[in-house]
Image (cartoon, rainbow, N blue to C red; front, side, top):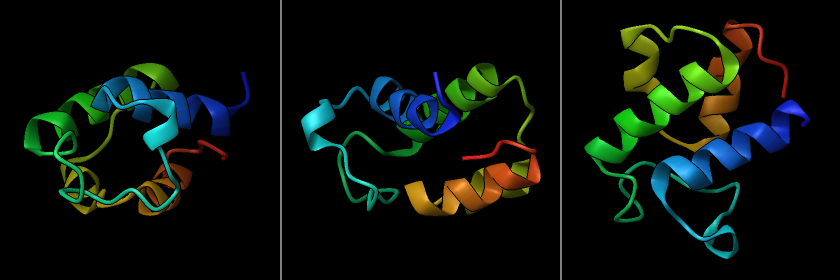
Amino acid sequence: MENREKYKEIFIKSLSIKETDFTDDLKYNEIPEWDSIGHMTLMSGLEEGFNISIETDDIVDFSSFKKGKEILKKYKVNL
C-alpha cells in the first residue's frame, strides 16, 4: 500500500469514520470523532503504521490532515 493511502486509511480507522465522510480538509475538533481521545488514537495509529515515534510538540501541532502530512515529512514519511 502506498504511504498516502496508508495515511488516509489510518485516519479513517483511528477516527472510526466512514470513507465517504473523509476529506483532505479534516481538522481537529471539526468532527465529533476527532476529539482529544480520537486524536491520541490517531497518533498511536500513525506511530504503529509508519513505525515512528511522534514528539509531543508534533502531537500538539497535528491539527489537520494537511498539517499532518507536513509533520510526517520530519519523520521521513513521504506522502
